Amino acid sequence: MANEHDSFIREVNEEIRSEQMRMFWARYGRIVIGGAVAVVLATAGWRGYEYWAERQASASGDQFIAALALVRDGKTAEAEAALQALEKDGAGSYPVLARLRAATLLAEKGEAAGAIAAFTAIGQDGSVPDVMRDTARLRAAYLLVDTGSYEQVAAEAEQIAVPANALRHSAREVLGLSAYKSGDMVKAKDWFEQTATDAQAPSNVANRARMMLDLINASGKAP
Image (cartoon, rainbow, N blue to C red; front, top):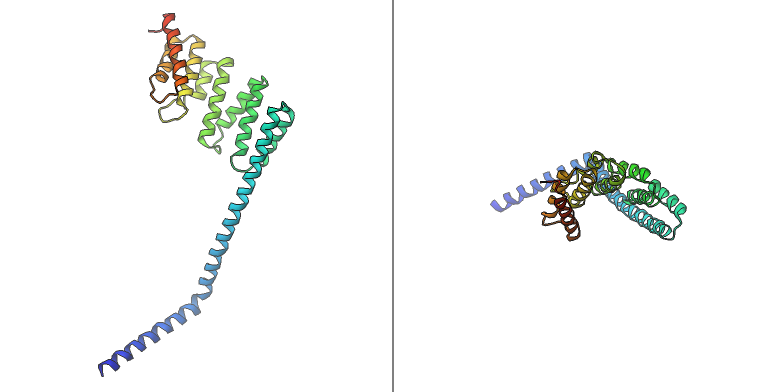
């Protein structure tokens, strides 16, 4: 008798669950199916976008290589046009790389003012990745050693010459060179000492810093 009772209870529970399921699907079935379809479509759309983005980046990479070949072959006008097109329509990081190479091309042509302006614009562009912004600032600072004041160089390079920045060694070097050129041997010595005593400084940069420190010490113009 107990077994029959238990069996009856199970059948009732199963019927209740079945009825609840029918009610659930009658009420929410379209929403559930619609949500599942939306997930499938979103996944397919994202995969399609990834494929498209990869194709675009690959095409931009080919354009960038072609532009570099034009530079190498001395076809400056064609190279500038190719880089400008890539800046406008390129994908991924290639528009920024094109901007950097175009600015370098200006410097190579002797158009320092235009190159400095181009590098500074990249350095101030918040949409550009930090490492590329810092690279642009550093390039502007090196050009300013010959054409600008220490204050102008410092405006570009001091924010890079901090312990956490991977480009700090070059930033300190350019600040030291600018200070030396301006006649401020105390400031120049400080920057070169920071470079020479940094265990992580590349050997060539550290060696140049030590050479500059020897010149400064020999001049007797810094304690």
